Every structure is written in C-alpha cells, then in structure tokens.
Image 1 (cartoon, rainbow, N blue to C red):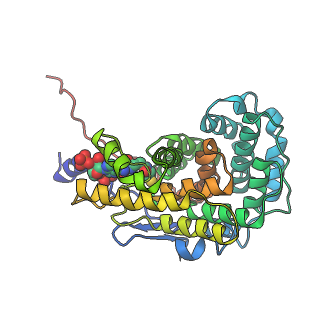
Image 2 (cartoon, rainbow, N blue to C red):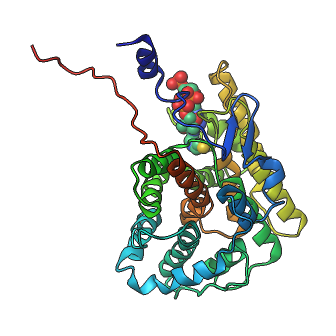
Length: 354
Ligand code: COA
C-alpha cells in the first residue's frame, strides 16, 4: 500500500484529479466558476441557454426546437415510463427509450420534453406540443404551464439553466464520463448521470430548502428554528459544499435573478425570508463549526428562483437535469476524444487468504 493510496482512502476521492477538462473549472477557495471560458456571473442570463450549449459543444450555434418536436413524437412509444410516481424515475426510464444513436441536441431536447410531459400527466392534463420558434427556456416553461410564459419568467429559467449547466467533475458528470470512457453511447451515459443526479446529496436539495422556508415561516423565527434543527442532528439544506469554502458563486447569480424578477413585477414572496434564513443559518453554522465555512450553495436560491418562475416543487430536480444534460453531453464528447478508459483503483482491505 503506497502512502498516496492511503491518503486517498482516508480523505475520500475529493481532490483527486482523474481527468482534464476545457468545459468548466471550479475554484472552491476563491468561489469562482468558469464555464466554457466565461465566469458564470457573465454567462448566465447574458448568453441564452442555446448559446451556452453551442460554446460547450463547440458549435457555431445550437437549435433545439426541431429536436423538441422529435422528442414529443416519441411520447406514445415510451411505454409506462412517464407513469412513474417519482419524476426522476420517469425521466430515467423515458430517456432510456431514445435510440443509442441520439445526438446531444436530441438528448438535451428530450429531457425537457419528457420532464414537462411527466408534470402534465401528474396534473391530470395532456402534454403540450413544443413550438420550434421559441427558446428552450420559453418552450420548456410553456410545456409545463400549458400556456406561454411572461418574458421575465422565461429569462429567470434561462438564467437558471445556464447557471447549472456544468460544474466540474460533479458526481453525475463523473458518472457520464466513466460510461462514455468505455466506448458506450451518449444515451447510456445520460441515463447513468440521471441516476446519480437523483440522489439527495446531489440534485435533490432544492425541494427540502422550500420545505425549510415554509417551516420557518417568518424571519424572526429563523435562528430558533435553525438552532433546533442542528440540536436535533439534522443538516441545514442549501448550506455547505464539498468544494466551496466561500459562498457558492451560483447562489449570487440565482439570487440576482430573483431580484430581477421582482424588479419586473413578478411576486417573489420568499426572497425576504430566504435572505433572513441564509443569514441566520450562516451565523448558527459558524458558531457550531468555527473552522469550517458553511455558506449558501446553489440549491438555496434554486428553490427561491424556480418557485418564483412557477416550476412545481416536484419538478425541481428534473429541471436541474434540463440544464445539466447539456454539460453531460459536452463531457461525453470530450471524454470520447481522449479515447481513454477511466478505471480508478481501489485499495483492498479485506481478508487475505492464508
Ligand atoms: N448543516 C449542518 N451541518 C453541516 C452542513 C449543513 N448544511 N454541512 C456540513 N455540515 C457539518 C458536517 O456535519 C460536518 O460536521 P462534523 O465535522 O461535526 O461531522 C462539518 O460541517 C463539515 O462538513 P463538510 O466536510 O464540509 O461537509 P461535506 O463536504 O461532507 O458535505 C454537503 C457537503 C453539501 C453534502 C453538506 O454541506 C450538506 O449536507 N449540505 C446540505 C445539503 C445540500 O444543500 N446539498 C446540496 C449541495 S450543492
């Protein structure tokens, strides 16, 4: 056993570099995220989601409308996939029905169309057919709501999708790259990534953040409520991060997007409460873990923004996938270009035959 492998086992896999990427970089100490050469603050909301896809996929431009129409035509052939009670189970099963030759456009469009169709089914309504002329954010919102969404809400969702599109070698992206590295197809890689994203330690926190805001109810109750949670041994949702030692830069981007909605006249009733809870949570956590900075992560304001945009709580993780799938596609292409199998080692610590 080498000292390096001992260290990996003790500290876990974080910090171990397993690949190079030109797609996104995370600086956890400085709180910076660069996506396709631009800071997330300069990209999200300024470059439409399709433009961000084009940068990540290294294309002059990307058009997702025709692929949404194609995905919608596949709905009758999905069997019982969209009948699953859990939306991520439904999405995983539905995406698995795509042909293994599907392109990045087809897979990215299908995630939005299938997520929206699941929500419509849950609400007891028929699916809404896509429109090619709309942006991906506008059409996704339209397919979920059943009617065109005001421009401010579309801008809010577009900002969200670009903010979460890629984030280094997070668990779902790593999953996608491992699958791609075996020479398997894009659809298989995305199905695996969806399975990783589903887990509550990865893509499942925004719903619980909203539950927390509702349980706190009013700013003056925040400190007592949060202290009681910690005393009961529970974690504060939307706070803390494996990589960031400062506030997650995406929290600021999403918070600004909520403020923009407010300025545009959209009701954002949870913003004041969310800010008070974030402030109180940072203080309570600083007292409990003085040596470990635990600040707001992306999920905190995801909950506030998606709620203000009108996305139902149960659809938060699938909508995360609507954005992140474009990053997965880019990583699969990048991994393929390396032609190298990702095959990390494990350290055997079991019994040794005598
Ligand atoms: N609430 C309360 N305590 C927390 C906490 C939180 N949100 N996040 C971390 N801690 C505590 C840990 O329990 C640990 O305490 P201990 O040393 O007494 O055991 C200490 O702070 C250090 O934890 P750390 O090593 O930073 O956490 P991690 O890297 O293992 O976990 C998360 C990172 C994101 C899983 C964790 O912060 C968390 O569970 N956050 C809430 C869920 C969430 O928002 N997830 C979305 C992530 S984008």
